[in-house]
Image 1 (tube, rainbow, N blue to C red):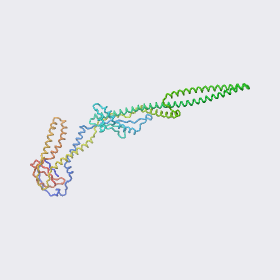
Image 2 (image 1 turned 90 degrees about the vertical axis):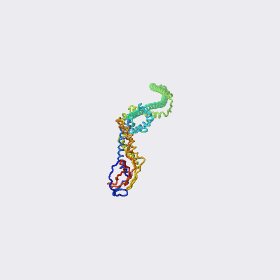
Image 3 (image 1 turned 45 degrees about the horizontal axis):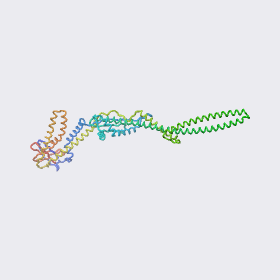
Image 4 (image 1 turned 45 degrees about the vertical axis):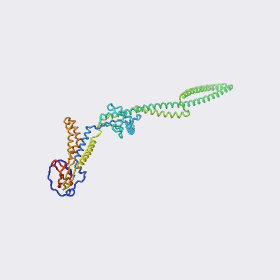
Length: 488
């Protein structure tokens, strides 16, 4: 197809026609039958212009428009230190803790606390802030393989983005550290209470165990006292017998009586010592019994020894846990640390991405506009075959092109006047206005107004290539040409 645009053409000489085949192609050449290729050849310049224009608009929007900015705050999860061994904790545990803390940062409790802590000019409700989290305008994540938590805020206001990121990180770190400190204090109080309870249980069991031991010891002393008393009675009877037999040998009898007397005195002393020990043990038993009576808990004396061993081990374990807790508290290692302040706001969309989007949008828009105009032009074409004389009728929309040009001029007039008064602002408004009326201008320039004209015979000419057919215009009063399709 050939499109003859509605513009004035200078008359030219028509060479003699040469014979052609049925399709009008010269022998040895081949015409273009692909409509897509024809469309590309006709409109490549227009698509190129819109593509470049789309890229320029995208870059201008990035530089001058309300482009989104992002600011990032970083929270560090330091590895825990073992004070006893002076070593760092397991890195995998630290990374796992970072992931857990990142999930905790998006909880409604943290969101509500951040909402209350924002400055008055940036105040948000918890619902609005939660929506920002859900829409990923506030993104909290722990990068894989690191002990860091990043809080990234995206907003068109760079100051607000930085303030929100900084406030979110500060509130989150303070809340986690405060909760950890309270948990450590609660754990300390719990261990102290358990240590006191275990010590009391151990004391009670030890009292029963001591009472059992004292009773056994008292029973042994009493048995010794009975045996000593029996021995004393036996020795006393022997001394009496020796005194009775002393008449035959007075000297031997006197010596034997002296020895027996000393022995009896020694036995008396042992007996008195045993009685003293028995009295002391009895007093201890009474004291222990009074202490047991005041204790509400009761223990079977037969298992007191086993219970004492168990309670001793429990008390040792609790004491070790308490000592470790005290060492960790003194080390002062908090679970989270804010790693500086929030970063300077930077554009959230890179220049490369903006160029790609602008070029793509301009290309698509150019193809769409070109296709629309091309379709409108095709609807106004008339086919003239070789040797055919036709009458080109007038159309009801003959003044469409002129009306479109007039409308473009009227719309542009106020903006041209505005440019003269407002230099800087006027230039920007002029660009916007030109973009608004540019389609009308194109329609007015590219779609001519058909008129009635008498057809003429269309001759054929030899061409260098059949790919580019000859252009023929049907003129009327040297002013207007008609769109004519010549099938070669």
